[in-house]
Length: 169
Image (tube, rainbow, N blue to C red; front, side, top):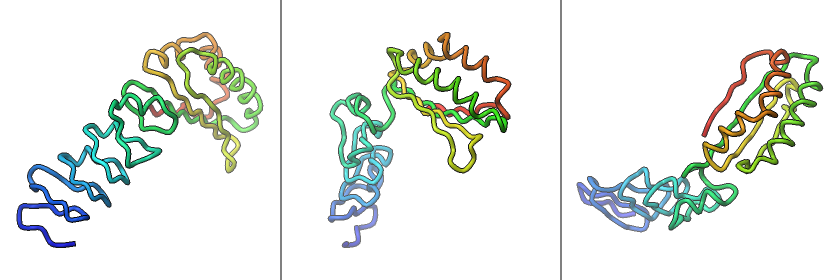
């Protein structure tokens, strides 16, 4: 690649732009007007980085909300993702699974639920992970206020070895 003149940035492929106004995307032929607009592992510059699709990193959605309606796309525009980790007391795993299975089945019936599953660690059978996706914040709030969620929380409170670790996206 040729060296750009002072004050310029040269992106792969020789594209050049004013250094003060732009940046190169990682491994990209494109020079974006803002580094935040570069899609990860992409050759695309989106107007809004939330519009970069994770399934096809080179793609930008014309309407970034469209990305969120498709599985595997980057979070954005209201979609709510929860990852909750539970450490269950030794010997309580089977009872925890019994109550968690009821919660999973009931949650999957909620209007605003997109995905809800429970995983148990293969390395430590006392560690569980809930992965949850909701249409929006309101759907998540409705879930957290639902009878089945509150029944699960009450029934399993004494089974937990520590406080739940909950990450929201």
